[in-house]
Length: 143
Image (cartoon, rainbow, N blue to C red; front, side, top):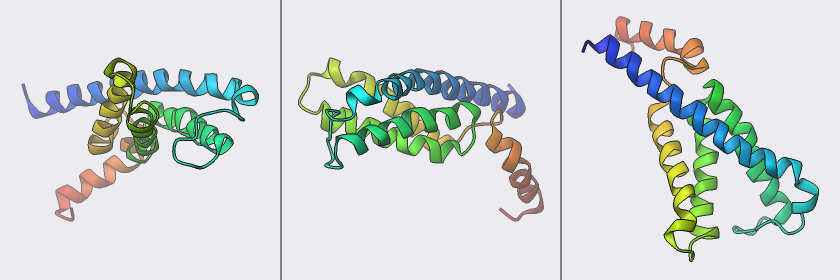
């Protein structure tokens, strides 16, 4: 397999991860957004910010960052709050729970960590906006 084909397949894989896990998490965030009034006063406050601010932070990550992830804009940046949210969910909120309870958060965390390291791939707005400049700089020996 040539380098170009491998790069294309890797980018298709990253697109699949970004869109699928972005949509999966968007559903969680949307439920929180729609139930904000009911949840605001008694949402989990695992790091001491207060229930309302914890809920707003979770919604910001789960809705806002998921949308950015889906379109591949600021992929590494967008995956960071999502990874942090999953760290808190896995190790703080569900820290004492059995593995089955924290497994989903750990799976999301693994995907977001991978996207922090890899970026969005060729089929992302990141590549559309900045990818061409990076490639030109590599050719000219600037990177």
